[in-house]
Image (cartoon, rainbow, N blue to C red; front, side, top):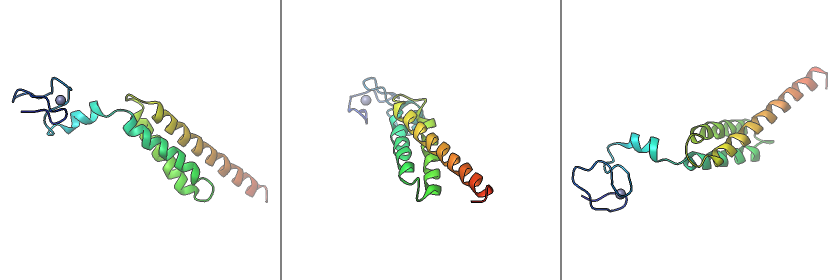
Length: 116
Ligand SMILES: [Zn+2]
């Protein structure tokens, strides 16, 4: 048989390709998920969510908060894999947004309590 990923000719009973190291069968997606996905698979969406939440920040803050949480969750999943820089940036942007939201929420409550 041939490797479905790189096309290398392999023994019929081969489980892992000797050329590219990937599983020859798609029946083991769990192995592929945990070993082959680089951090950028989570890092890029995390960074995108981190930027998008700032876009929503002032006129749709509940959406921004949800997107910021998504950025942090995606970043947390990508941060343990290779290419973690983007995941860290996503967590930072999402975390910064939530902190700022919390700050303005406290400020709003404080002003409201003070009678404004
Ligand atoms: Zn291969």
